[in-house]
Length: 119
Image (cartoon, rainbow, N blue to C red; front, side):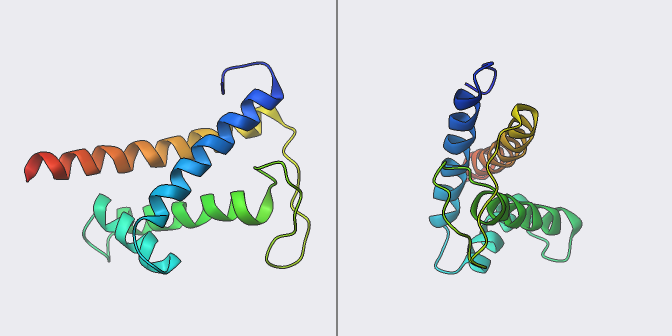
């Protein structure tokens, strides 16, 4: 879908990947901070390390993009600051966001698989 020339197909692909990431995040605890911490620790267990910091920051940024800045789900509602979210109409930018979210999901999946193999 993300490779399609159709803008709506690209938007749908981004919506699906963001939904998958949000679902994974939601399974990790009660508070957003706890969820990001848990997932970041699954990638690198050193809370003082740069990898941990980058993963946690990336999770936070991806959620801000989808929930605060842009109208990923095509529903034009206001964000937490009562500002209208911007519509996504640039196909290359949609691909960029998709690739960031996909890369994060892929990394989390690889680390989860690695942990399961060690058990």
